[in-house]
Length: 256
Image 1 (cartoon, helix red, strand yellow):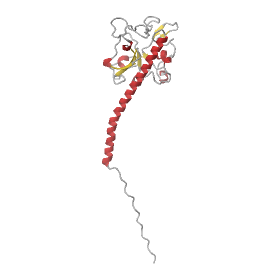
Image 2 (tube, rainbow, N blue to C red):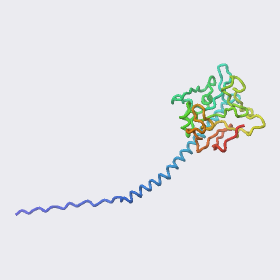
Image 3 (tube, helix red, strand yellow):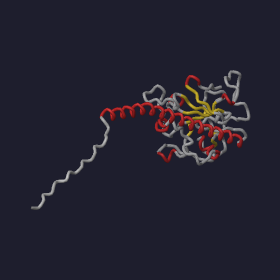
Image 4 (cartoon, rainbow, N blue to C red):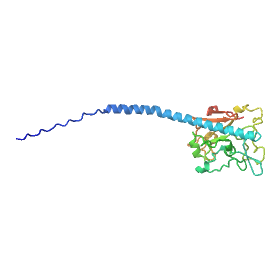
C-alpha cells in the first residue's frame, strides 16, 4: 500500500518591528519644534545677508561717484545738454537694465550728454560682472512698486546747504542750481551746518515710503501699502568718504 505524503509546514516569516503610534507622534512633534526654531533663524540670516549685499552695492557706487569726480575736476556726476550746459542728476538711482524687465525708463550709459541718471554716468567705473548692483536685495517691494524700479537714491535735494549736490534737474541748464558741486571744495556752507566732515555727510541710501514716497509710484508714507525701510526698520547709507553705515529711523545722519 503506497504511503500517503504528509503536508509540509511552511515556516511563517518572523514579524518585523514597526513604529508605534506614540513613537510616530513623538517624531512629528520633534520635527515641528525644530522647524519652529530654524525657520525664524533662516529668515534672520537671509535678511542679514541682504543688508550686507546692499551695503556692498552702496559702497561700490559711492566709490564710483568719487572716481568720476576725480576725473572731472572734482565735480560730482551731472548730465549735460548738447551745448555742454549742466542739467543736473535725478535723485532716484535706476538700474540701466530696468527697461528690459518692463520698467518705463531708459538709461544712457557712459555719456553725460542728455543723461541725468546717476547709474549711467558712473556705470563705467563699476564692474560689469556684478548682477543687480543697482537694486537693494532687501527691497523687492520698492522695485515692484516704482515705475522705474528705484531702490536707491542720492543726496540731491533742496533741503541741504548748498542745495542739490549733484545739480537740480528742474533748474535752467547751465545755472548755478543745475551745476554739480565739487568735492575739491567744502560741500558744506555757512555756520549753521550740523555736519563738518565728509564722513558725516551721506551720499547714497536705500529708498522707502518715508524718504521717497510719492515719487515714481512709491507709496506715500502712512498709506496702507507704505513700504518700510528694508533692513529691519533701518536703511543703509554710503557717506562721502566711502564708508557705509546702517541707520534706524530714530538715528538718521544729519543733513547740513
